[in-house]
Image (cartoon, one colour):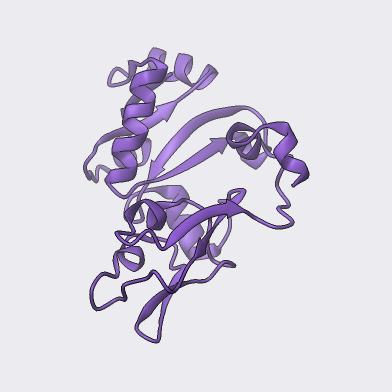
Length: 185
C-alpha cells in the first residue's frame, strides 16, 4: 500500500486538506511508488488510521478498479465534491460510482432535528437527505452507503444495513467489504 497527494488535485492544481489522501493498493502501489515521488509506502495499520482520518474530514472512500470492470482494484480514493473527478462525474451524470452493499437506516424518533443539528445533511455529498417535519430523512434510493452521516450523527439515529437485492455482489468492492457468505443475504 502507498499514499500520496490526490491525483485529481495534482492534475487540476487545486488543493484541499488533507492533501495526502490517495491510497493505492496492490499493483497500483508499485506503479505509483515508481512514477510519483510524493507517494510513500504504508503498512495496514497506518492505512486504517488514515482511512479514519479521511472519514473524520468528511471524505468518502471509493474503491476504484480498472474501467469499472470489477477487476484489477488499484486505489481507494478518498473523495470530496469540489476536486475529485469520480465524485464530480457522478454528481453531474449519476454514473461512474456504484452504490455500496450497505445503506443508511434511520430511526426518526432519535433524530434531534435540523434546527438543533443537521450534520447529516451537511456531510452527505450525494444529497441523499431531505428535511421533513423538521428532521433529516434519508432517501435510500439516493444513498450510496458511505456512512458519513452515521458516524456524524450525535444522536445515533442512523445505522448501516445490508441493501436488499444488492445487484453488485459480483464487483470487487462488495467482495472487499463483506465475506462471500454475506452475498446470499
